[in-house]
Length: 127
Image (cartoon, rainbow, N blue to C red):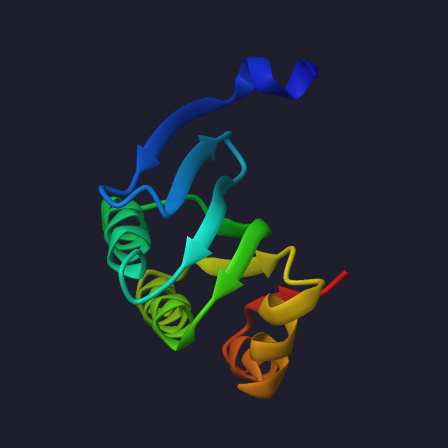
């Protein structure tokens, strides 16, 4: 894919190997692709990557792609909310995509993640 030529990629694997986090940057946005299980054991790794990314400063949009996440628990949701809070302080829009099936979507809908994100000008896309 031609777009990959313009991307900078960093891979971050958690020490417990539950999740893998890849960061792709372009001039217009940063995309964080998360794979695996986001649990109480692995969410600290995602938190670390997100906070470091947001504190360094980022372009106007950061996309968190959960398409490859097979499971997320409430600590993962808390990590997304903390990332949102940091993004708002840094005037960065945050978009969560890929929470379209199974347990990930169910939990995101249960905690009304889309409503929380939209209240501050960010979004969760379920499709």
